[in-house]
Structure formats: C-alpha cells, structure tokens
Amino acid sequence: MKIWVDADACPAVIKDILYRAANRVQVPLTLIANKLLRVPPSPWIRALQVPAGFDVADQRIAQEASAGDLVVTADVPLAALVIAKGACVLDPRGDLLDAGNIQERLTLRNFMEGLRGSGVETGGPAAFSAADRQSFANRLDRLLAQYTRR
Image 1 (cartoon, rainbow, N blue to C red):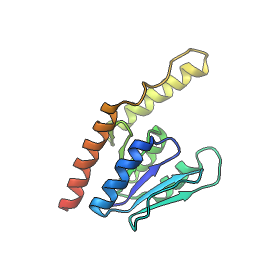
Image 2: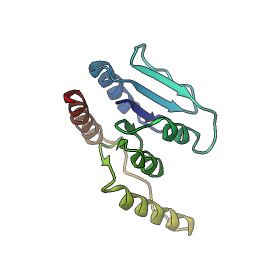
Image 3: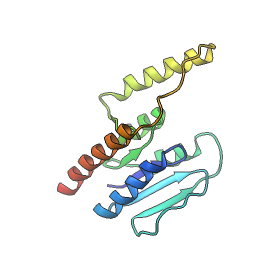
Image 4: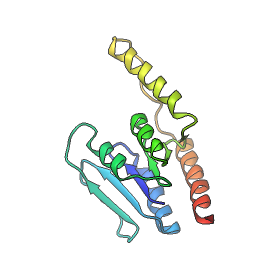
C-alpha cells in the first residue's frame, strides 16, 4: 500500500496526521501539488511538485495510484478514476469513497456544478472542523490497521 495525497487543497492538520501515520506504520506517503511543499525528513514521506495547470496534480495521482493504494482527496472526479483502478479514497473530512458510493457523489457534484453554472448561489462546504479532523484520523487508523494485518 502507498498513500497518495492531492495536496494542493489538503488541510495542514490532515497532512500532519498523515506524516505521523506514515512514520508509525512505515507506509510510503507521497504528496502531490503544483506548489513546493515542505515535508518532514523521513524515508517514508516525499513531496512531488508538478507543473501548474488545471488538474495536473490529479492526473499524476491517477497515473501513479494502483489497486490497494489509499488516495486522500476531496476531488470527486479524481476519486472516481482511482477507485476504478482499485484504490481506496478517503476525503479530508473522513468520508470513505468506494465503488458503492462514488457514482452518487459524482451525480451530486455534477448537479451542483450545473446549478452554479446557471447562476444559482449554492454556497460552499462547511468550514473544516475539529470533528472533521477526528473523523479523518479515526478512519485512517482503521484503514491502516487493516493494512498492517495483511
């Protein structure tokens, strides 16, 4: 298992949780962004900078991720791509996306995008909270526990 992070929009607190988890479980963690990232020195953690551009980081993650990997992203189309390859997806709020729920998420995303495109003000997501952080940490711990039992 490898962990891939869509790091451009990933909250710093989630990155910190991932750094600690990667070192604790000794699983490779790669953060991909189109900006330079500082990561702690560790044989398990690396950051890749990709050129600026629409979905360049997403394309790289989709190319690199494989079956059995974990991808951390809030990007639903990226989640769909890596789920199709057999990867598991965890969003920064702790929601697990898989083959059973990704189509529903894609449909909702496309519907909301259509509303915004027609001028309807839909608002944005709720502010990231301590409960979101805890939900992510708990779900990540469960996923990593499953990985280490293999």
